[in-house]
Structure formats: structure tokens, C-alpha cells
Length: 438
Image 1 (cartoon, rainbow, N blue to C red):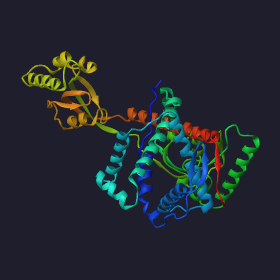
Image 2: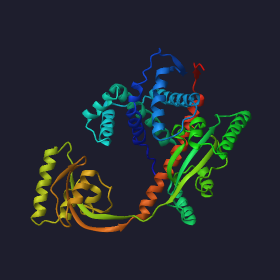
Image 3: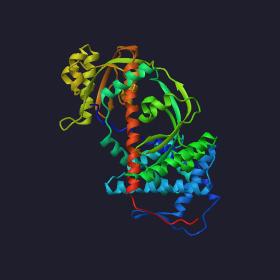
Image 4: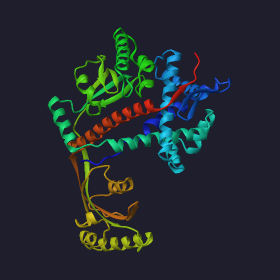
């Protein structure tokens, strides 16, 4: 059994936040003058008109920039409100489960956002202020997105695992069909059915899906239709799922996609969550060849502990280095002194290593050493190191790399399915009351 791992990343939602907040200046030209009021109750929390109006303006600007045609205002407003409701439910559950985000984490994320935008933290704050964005509000949005990411991560860690047999089965099937590296660019519409739906509810959703499919077949814009009607999390992106390899596709889409042509729209696809319509926007083939530069190296690690201080560990390794330079055998000294017990038995050897295997500062030192050269001592979070590069080679690690990538892709597909079902369930279980006028 392959151990469960969390593949969620902050980057997707942070990129969205940066984009959305980047257009907040649009709000300055349309300041809301009427008094705020409650438009929805979500369990014991509320969503106000000001909150909804802000989100609508930001999303409108984003969609206009992407040249996505907007649906009617009333339809768009309902979609945005539903997204806010779902966010509120997730935050309530995170609070109930005691999930917390400390200031250090928020600060680190904000610093990374600033770096991605090639700005210092001070300049980034200045840009926010220039665009009329409250920094405390920005921090709160970052915090909320991390909280939602973490509670989703808990669900994934609990319910998703990948076995080596699943990877083997995928590789066998992909090799037979020749589509192991094929990527698909998809758009998606979901007409959901509630948990424990009655036959009438299922029929109502089916009729709605059939009506939408008919409109699409007559030339209706897929993105606009998705924004107006889809219950999927990508609805406000026009239903766009982006580029996905076969292993990342929801299982029920795989066989359908294989038979579709460019720009074709599928028939209705039924699943426990509802009725799906997919469109094949594009298709491309990749390469399964990956040549990397590998390094054969050995090292000696001295760790600070209760007996030896950090400076003591540093001085001990300095003396060991002098002995090696003077002609003593590296492997013997590694066996005697290295605190990396695994490699010490092998004379300090870490074997042939591909890029990305070690922590960044370890790899930086490794990449700069000439063959046979002994490094100066250096520190990582594990302790003090001394390294020697024994040899280098070019190596085709396509098989290992592909297996790792396939494992990640299958995990991501399963994670998306689990999260989608979980979101649908918590939405159905929540108490929602609307206070909307026409």
C-alpha cells in the first residue's frame, strides 16, 4: 500500500486571490451607497449584500478579462451567492473541528505571493493600498482559503489512498491504448442531484440537463452556459478544467473522451452526483522520455543533540574534513562518525540521485562540486554535512518518473471526486435561508 499523501497546494487559490484582488480598483468607481443587509443565513452565520456585491464585481472583472460572456445578472448573482454559501459552510466546519492557521503561516504565504509578483513585501502592501485593498481584509481572505484547503486535505487524507496495483493497471491499459502521455483540455457542466434524491428530483435534474444539452447542440456558448447553470466548482471559470492526462480524468469520463473529436460535446453522463456534459476543447500528445543528470555522492552528517552543541557538531566535522584532506579514507570515517545511519553503513554513499531528491541547499552544494572534490562543511535542517561527488551520468529515468507522476495523477483524480462529493453532502446538510428580492 502506498502511504497516503496530501497533494493539495495553496498555489491555485492564491493565484486566484492575487488575480481577483488585482481588480479591486473597479470597486472604487462603484462604491456601494445603500445600507448593507442580510441576503442569506448559512447555519448560524450570515452573508450580506455588500459581501455578495464585492465578490460579483471582482469575478465579473476576471471573466471579462478572460473574454468570457456573462450570463444574465440574476443568474450570475445566484451562482456567486452559492459559492459564498459553500465557502461559509467549509469555514464553519473548520472552526468546529478546531483547525487553526497561525500568523507565521499567513505571513509566509503572503510573502510568497509578493515574490511571485516580483515585489518586496513593502511594495506589495503599497500596491494593495493603492488599489484600495485593506491589508487586514487581504490577510483574512488568505487565512480563509488556507482553512478551506486544510479541511479538504483532511477529507482526502482520510479517504484517498493509492496502491501499486492501481498504478500497474493504469500503465498496462495506457500502454495498450497508446495514450499514456495524451493530455485533454476539457470543459464541464454538472447538473447535480441531492443526496438521497427522490425519483422526481432525479427526473427534474435530468430534464434540466437534457434542455441544456439541446441548447449546446444548437450552438449555445459552453462557457456562458456553464457559468449560468453548472453546479460544479469550476462553473464560474466557464466550466474549464484545463489540461488533464488520462489518469487525472474522472473515471466515468475516460471512455467517453477517448471517442470524442475536437470541440465535440458529449451526451449526458450519469454519476451518483448528477448529470455531466463535457466538451473536448483540445488534445495533445506528450513524450514519455525523460533524461536527467544523476550524481553519485557520499556524505558525512553530524547532528547537534543534547550531548553536542551546534558549534560542537560544526567543529567535529571540520576536524574530520582535515583528516580526509590529509589522506584518511572517507568511507571509513563515514562509517565511524556519520549520524546518517543509513548511508554510514555504505561508507556515506547516497547512491545515484536525480535532481529534486534532496533539500535545496544540499542540492546547491552538490551541483557546484567537481567530480572527486570534497566540499566545505555546510548546514541543512538535518545538521552539518561534508560531501564528495564521486561521479555523474545522464540517465533515462522515464519509468520511475512516469510511475510517480501517474501515482500523483490518480491521487488527484480521486481527491477531486472525494472533495466534490463531500462538498455536495455538506451543502445538502446545511440550513440555508435566503432573503433575496427580485
